[in-house]
Length: 68
Image 1 (tube, rainbow, N blue to C red):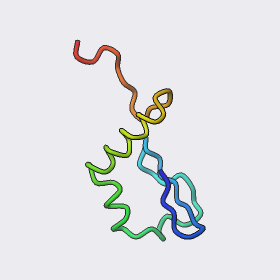
Image 2: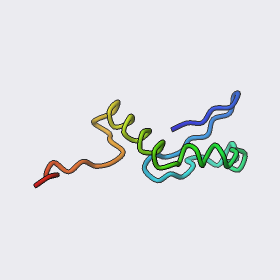
Image 3: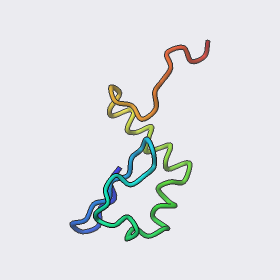
Image 4: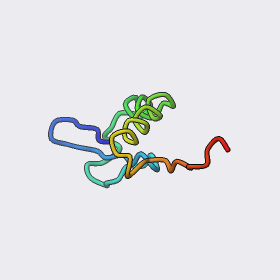
């Protein structure tokens, strides 16, 4: 997922929750923004939307044997 501010962009991995780049400095992103993105409800929504849009490259591996 990408946070945009002006011409700067910070990429966060949906798999690890970590910033993917050193520049721009991740410390420049306000804690309130990070807390909002990484709230359980919002993080789940982001991951689910990614999985829906990119089913061949899901964030979470889906076990075909779920429910057995």
